Amino acid sequence: MPTNWPATCWSNVLLLAACVSLLPITSHYVWLGEFQQEQEVQLVIKTSAQQLPRLLKVLPHHHSYETPELVVLDASAVGSYGDWLVKALAPADPVPSRGRHG
Image 1: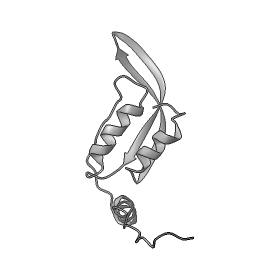
Image 2: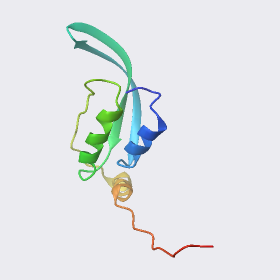
Image 3: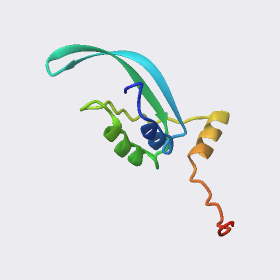
């Protein structure tokens, strides 16, 4: 993932996630028959099963790679972090309309 991702991309991801961690990594892989070594930023995105399909649609459109690495791990968060995560991913309560203020 590029480190200079546009703000609009981040806003799309953050609407579908509770938290995104950026981890600087060095990747070693074979691409088109040649060994590659790249400095990359790996995103660890904490989201819900309900948000995952939408997130998987958004990410590839904003990624600079032809074949982005998207790995989904099923995990559970516990304790106070788990409580926060559930609340952060809950749909927002609609704000009642009060009409126009003039």
